[in-house]
Length: 265
Length: 317
Image (cartoon, rainbow over all chains, first blue to last red; front, top):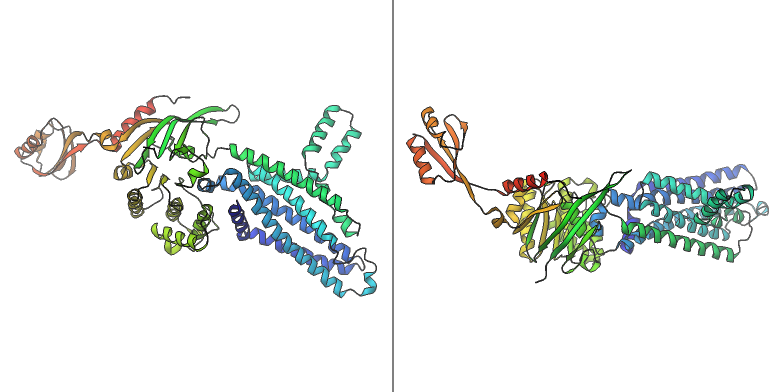
């Protein structure tokens, strides 16, 4: 399984798309430094906002665009024929693919975090102490790592969603569905609110089912609070991580279940 | 003695049609047994079910009914997969890897790593004749080279049973001959080779036993010499200096007379006519005898006959 994972990582490293994404993320962070200079006193907040948002968005693109092709490409190009004749089970194949993509994401996110903190450190060093008093949180606030970590868990959930779709549908449809789940997952709280507005039991039944079925991605989004220096309690982080792990477990179980029953015509 | 490969009423239905799926029988109750150490040819026209059978043996598709064993264990078991090699039809491997990396990766799946895996990769790539290009990414390979990589990866674990799906496809005449030699050397090393092909010359050159498949059904199986019986069906004579009178005399006795050039003809005579009598006829007509050969049923004739018979019958569902 680990070897399949390493091979996924190597494939994505050799995929130029990935370099572009990292490049753009870095570019965006650099651009945010320029914008920051235009608004005195607010720069650190803007950079944090932009930087954290950029990491999530680029991570999302990596997760979706690699995730949807992981299984599909192997089946479509028939490279899976020779691979599955080797002593690995289909379960190991799926878990290896997943682990490989998560590893890719972790490395990319790591690079982005390093670039992000470098920009912030540079800002911290060049800002006079007087101006720093207006900051809601220090530039090199370690709490931001909590936001990044939770964003990573969220990406792991999205990756599992993309992988699940990839086991039975085409990349285009998988991408659409995964983005759909991502958007719906962020607004899943609104699904709950539908019940208070709509009287029809049929509709509330559907929205309630969707609410429980879709991942509640808002639980992983603490970026705004971190940027403003609001505390994020550890119990909340722990619950979010636990929820993420359970959700990923369910998604991967479903992916393995579907994949194990498939015929490769 | 334990069989190397055995299938028991192996059947596969695919569902075809989107709105109203109907079953389509790709393979119909296939039962065959392959003994250890033999080269077994699995023959049939395109669409006969050869690839389906191999995929069932690799558990790439699940049987509708029946089952298969390899080395006495259920096909698809990880323990079985450790001891077999598989070359898929028109194989494709990861573009972004070099041939060496691919083999090291696959060797790794068998638990071999580091220098040992690299040495094995180098040895296998030399064996299939692409050692010089081992550091080239597979996207730069020609079809024939990919086919050779496919052969190398099928042997990466020193398998006891090797499954080759159309191993000659995409190869030039030289490559085909090399693959033949390779397959024979695999047998000499005591391995069992199961290969599918629609090219009969390959089977005639290699196999001890064959099975002929048409429309998903086994139409014949057994030893090649028993199946063909090498029955003489007639005699072909090539003669030179055939004058019009000679032609007029020989034509009514021959089954067929085909002009090959000025004064040069090929005649086919009935097998009832003895060779000596044929020679006498040709000489008496004043023509020069160039050659006389028995016409035997070739695997191709046999194949065409068997397959035509099966094609006439409706496919079972």
